[in-house]
Length: 284
Length: 279
Picture: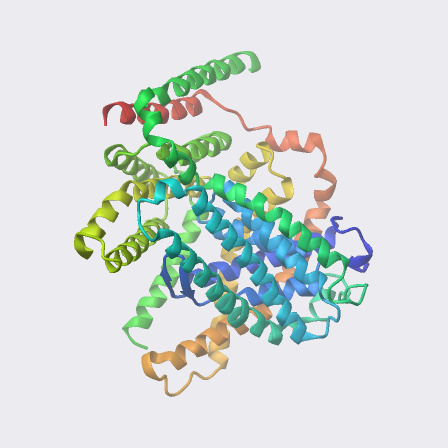
């Protein structure tokens, strides 16, 4: 096993150690998500008051290993354990968390100047959660504005949604980011640093080479965050087609009738049948 | 230890069994019999289809059909209840909140009629969301992880991600079991607070602290396991096979769309057409 320092390598290069780190973070993040599901929670629409998720374990490990793949492992763990496993998987909706959680964590990891400064790391954990929630809030409110025509029948909804979203994001940052994120991380990080890396055949990662808290990589990360938020929004809006389809509903169905939808379906079915039979008869 | 604790312990054990059954026991599931690509595309279609319907009757027919399908696919009842409850409570909250605001702003008809109006307005929407959740739950929990990973791989999802799915399914019960054991052994070695306080909050806080501390040994165990996993994978040539076309073909060789897959697709589309025309 080689013990190369991660930072001397290219950001996206993927070796065996990255794979180990990826599996480690993915499994533990997924486990804490499944466990947090079992804890009591009090949910009022967008506003959730719950114990967990236990993000401290994810933050501790991401800050310990600090590679792009470590950041990516967090949303992948969430998708695999929290969505696909229980069957509640929406492919386009998953893209949002893949993009925004990864980039938010990555920005935080670039700002680590001194790996022993636990208080600064706690601040960074809150920064990462804050960036993630900020993007999520923009996306949720944006989704509402896309679908606004169909929903304006209900009075006071815009104000309600803004209030609920802001309150939801704030409570998430406080509960998941600080109480179950940054604070337990301050306990775990110093105890794990230097102990867990040798298990994977690695050396503890040092601070960012520039030695500054806000450096070129941070700015690049922030730029990527700004670029990725609208992209994530498009995917998220597409996954919840509610707005788009509700808007053009009545005229569309009145003019063509519901039978209209059957025509392309039947045509596609006949084509599919023919192709499969043809391939079976020629292939075998 | 009261009745509540007994209830909670039973449910956690039940949920564990239920989750494991969902992930592993899908040999007899109806949807598992078909080609994974067909099931993935099928569920993608049926996540969109409900949005084309606006009347309660066809949506209700679809809800019944999707529940039947979920039953035939041996979907976990617990997860089903959780999903349905999730969509109901979400919508219910919006209905109540907007009605209260409407009433507070002096809207005509009073609070009760505002609630009724808003519920009726949102009923089709609720049913749509429920149909979608049930359909995707039936599809994704019925397929065995191996099949699902293969299906996604052949639809162009990168191999490391499909590997993560298969690995997650394999490891989930092990991880849950190990974590549960660690929490229990911490409970054995620690002393529960003598006075549990109002609503037993001290006791629950103590359990929560143990649950957090259990992640410390857990992390080291998982780290060792992930190293062993990667080493085992490399002895089988994992990274060598990543970009290898022959390996991909070998992996996907037994995927085949047969007439019964098309029949399945056709019957379900026919069902939608019948519902659309006659209801």
